[in-house]
Image (cartoon, rainbow, N blue to C red; front, side):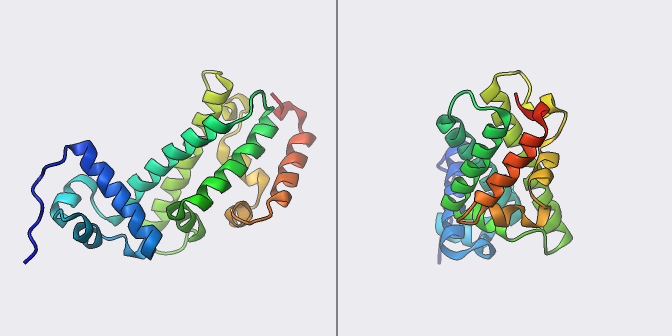
Length: 199
């Protein structure tokens, strides 16, 4: 009979282990296999102990995606060219986002599954979209060192900019495609038409 591990890790190490285990499960098997039982089987910790810290499978996925978003933020900021106009900045951001998502299967699977499914899943997807909007606003705030993000400076939120760039149902399909020239041309045409969007 399998015995559960006693608590030997501190909280931050335990959370890091659950996050990395969850990422491996999704990468190897898919989102549908991210369940407390599977995480418990791999880590040796009881489902009740994991539940105490994380809750259900969507709560685990939420924390995993938050963790990956922070990695994305670090990678994007470390690799951004200096002195971009807002139009150029936004185009580079789209490309960096696509590259990061394609390297991280958890995000690729999440963004490719769309808004279908149960009401709870739809609400979860909306929450993830809001977190990504906040992430990009935070990146622009740091990049421009304005004390506020560029979307606030422009009087637009990132959601409005996304919908300017592509129809909602095509957004991720275009950004995850091999050829993103069409996306780039559309972004450039939008921002070139309205010069006040240049910084």
